[in-house]
Image (tube, rainbow, N blue to C red; front, side, top):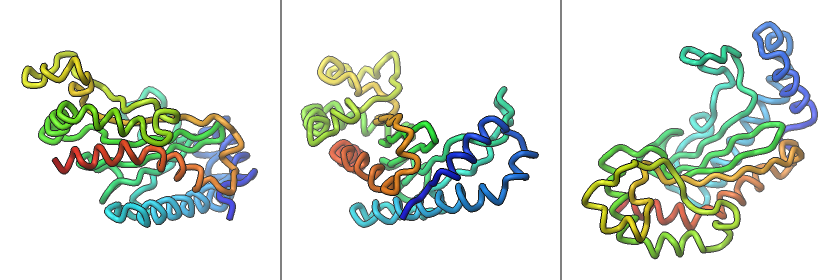
Length: 223
């Protein structure tokens, strides 16, 4: 079954050029049929298929989705609507800082796929840092497994400029002990992907490539 269609792409491009409420209201029926409905189906497919392999991911499709309306309260850009759609499969909620997640951003210009452990609370962050330092060889092995390195390179993330003193012994071996987060990200700029009938499987294949690193992070949060 196809998800997004040529009509979906036409709506997206129209919205990008006419990002205002009047245009959106005029084309609301097109949005409902050709963007919202396939978006809902895609979220349901991804959530269901992730859960089949990793049953701890209990988030619902509704919870995994994002609103098309932008939050413009603190932004200089006051355009009211997003021109891409996101789906995040967290363990029990979309933004669960206590467990690795999978995410995808979809637009007419391609898709971006990622995940990992994003901005954990300080206590968990420090526990993961210690695990990364003590299991640096296992992290390297996870990143070398399968196609992870080819697809994502390595786990990345923002780091503190100064590493805590108790981690200095690990810094030379594995600098990512200073990270605040451990994430992976890849972009596929093929415009044909947006209307590919196998879009769900394409995304799942990317997430499958990330599974060795995700398993490392799962072990770290359970440490």
